[in-house]
Amino acid sequence: AQSVTQLDSQVPVFEEAPVELRCNYSSSVSVYLFWYVQYPNQGLQLLLKYLSGSTLVKGINGFEAEFNKSQTSFHLRKPSVHISDTAEYFCAVSDNTNAGKSTFGDGTTLTVKP
Amino acid sequence: DTAVSQTPKYLVTQMGNDKSIKCEQNLGHDTMYWYKQDSKKFLKIMFSYNNKELIINETVPNRFSPKSPDKAHLNLHINSLELGDSAVYFCASSPRQRDTQYFGPGTRLTVL
Image (cartoon, rainbow over all chains, first blue to last red; front, side, top):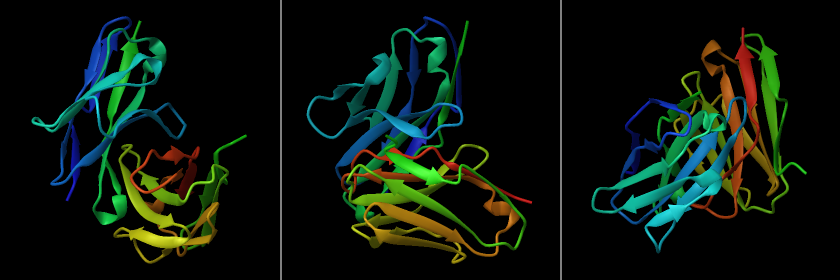
């Protein structure tokens, strides 16, 4: 069975500082990995995804993530955050079992302070 | 042009009532989902359909019944609503299983 652990429930950071949101996953087969962002009172939208190939994945809004198979991690990073990055961030994993179901982490609340 | 739309956006109702939430996607996707997001923002999958066939049915009370009349629509009917059903319900679609999911704006259900 697959699972996702987001290691930080809340991450406060000052504007223009770098940020890392951590995600570890567990699966016995090859995985697809996703990061989604949810702004207040909205649905989730895709930030970036890893399917195969290069382990460094670039997404929208200046975010990037690195797939590390040996550490089963997929941490999200941004070198300089803006106030507008304040949102809930979800890591998700899907594999080729159980009809390709995606399992979501519990979310990390990123708060960017001026 | 809204890719995944849900109606209604807000739903306030009394315990014991029956209600439905509708979802439509105009992306031509084969797979659709229903998720429940609780007050702590935890997101749990409830159901998934692929080409109108139910493929994922998580541990959800049988008061919840999904219906997919065609590939573009996935509705959720809830019987005998309970206080614990209060949550935000999201519909999503994807081109195929395992792929990127596109979420609707959510339906905030409040059971009084």
